Image (cartoon, rainbow, N blue to C red; front, side, top):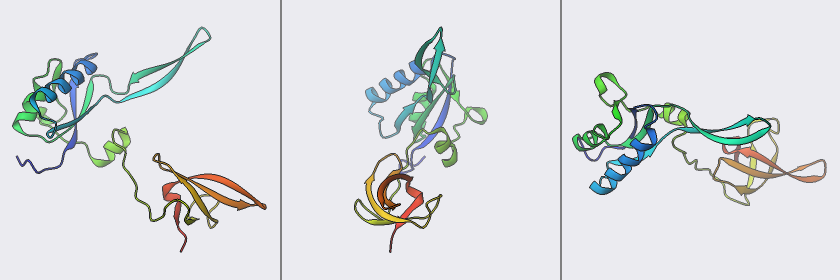
Length: 174
């Protein structure tokens, strides 16, 4: 297998309750063997849930897919062997335990990777709203955040009003 190939996300099945142990053991093994170029990231998909018991609220982190760990790796004989032989790991998800990478849509749906969006405007430029209820308005963009939001100052009813938009709702005003 080629070493120049791109790392992809794979799903590994573990014994129930062993997800954290498998992830930490794998991270330790990758570090000790110097395999960071082959096994690049290890994630356990979780969500934060608010539980209310006897009028007490508390935030709890729950595993979205108990018994599974996501690994971003380049599959070689060595990397496959290391992952398969971690205690608590029962194998890759796929036919005959052969690793099958997640599709781009699955990676986005699981939220395991943030994709950066490049835009054709920068802070202080005039921009145009291209979708949503304020479509057609133009304003001066003031803030561009890393979490896919843009704050635009719009002149509405004689006042300047800051409005939040997603990056794909805005374009450079030509």
